Amino acid sequence: MTGRFTILGAGVVGLAVATELAARGATADVFDPKTEPGGHQCSWWAGGMLAPFCEGETAEPVVVRLGREAADWWQAAGVPVIRRGSLVVTPDRDARELDRFARRTTGHRWLDAEALAETEPALAGRFSRALHFPDEAHLTPREALRALHGRLSVRRAPPNGGRMTGPTLDCRGLAARDALPDLRGVRGEMAVLRCPAFTLTRPVRLLHPRCPLYVVPHGGGVFMLGATQIESDHRGPATLRSVMELLGAAYALDPALAEAEVQELGADARPAFPDNLPRIRQRGQTTYVNGLFRHGFLLAPALARRAADLVLDGRKSEVVE
Image (cartoon, rainbow, N blue to C red; front, side):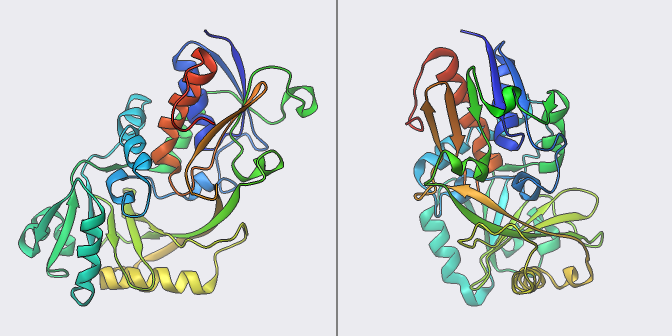
């Protein structure tokens, strides 16, 4: 079955759903309060890690399984994907944290100090061992949003004054709480740094006891640092406490980052259901795709595929309610 669908929301989920429907021969009309990607979207402040195995430390197995589809989907969509894996490190004084992380995850191999220095020279001499997840990847979120957006027509106002009369996929994130009252906001705060003297070729997670940190290279000496995880739907600017914790943890990763330029500080609230798992809910002619929590770029491809399976062919999956 093909047809014409209305997509509400032009964040990573809405754009991925529209892209998937278009790839299957359907027409997708996308509507959003703003017609260009930007800081009004929580997708704009993502790190871009396609790291399903690492997420398995705290996430359910379904997140790991669905997340393994992400890198191939993004690459097929024409988005540059860097497949150099990811690293997890911790100061020697917190070595048990790395052991705990290893027990809770799969898809990794241990690196000693010498192997770590060969894998990521910027970290030479900083850590005595690390976990390398070779099958993980990353992308630049803003580049990915622009790439999908550029192939779609995004308009400001939906037809009929917002009253949907045909098949609709609602991908509005937290804004959909008018229809999904069990959605909650989980606030994340991030920093964008520029430090040409510091080089990473893959994302690195630091298991800091107070403020776990990830650093994602976005090219040109630019890095995304994140992210706090606060039970709040407040979407205002980053707080002083969070910024101090993030930058302090970055300094613990490598003192060279003390000379980094702070280019941006950002914050937003990510949509999540009580169990932090995504859902596709069908109510009449409206299908809701939501609750991706902190896994937007990781899970959007799999949710888009399953939403398309549902609305085009009536096929249900484990994330459909």
